[in-house]
Length: 181
Image 1 (cartoon, rainbow, N blue to C red):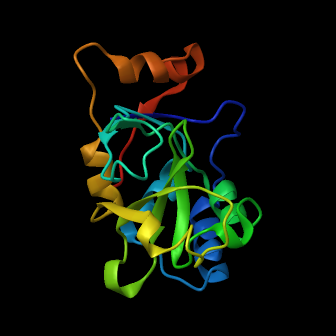
Image 2 (image 1 turned 135 degrees about the horizontal axis):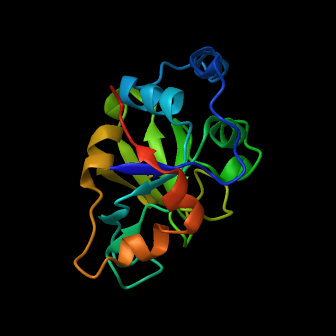
């Protein structure tokens, strides 16, 4: 598996582990070890392979296709902005970190809740207040039991549709192997 950094992003700082630890303290949570390793080593980016079969029911999906693209995994700065409510405000699900997205508004959530700690969920973002009838627990769906399992579920098709989406000249030139250990 490869990951390309976001264009224009500076190299990962030497103090990245301390920055990740400070973020965990700021959200009063321990991060799952696999996700902490990801932020420390890669600080987000564009993974390849990048396709997955989403678990959201037909009534929630904006597309008739089950196949979705893991377009981007957020870096620490973006995860922290989401955690502060700077993007979705009171619409974001509580007990989760917003960690990535597909091209159509499907947000990847990482659970910090005791009952499903570390699991990855899908949420079709909307502006309704979290807890309202339009935006509540019935609108999030567990995709994988861990961040590592989510990454392991990403695949490519024979026609390379995922590669065609991912392979900008910048991504191809700057991609590195994605390792969590």
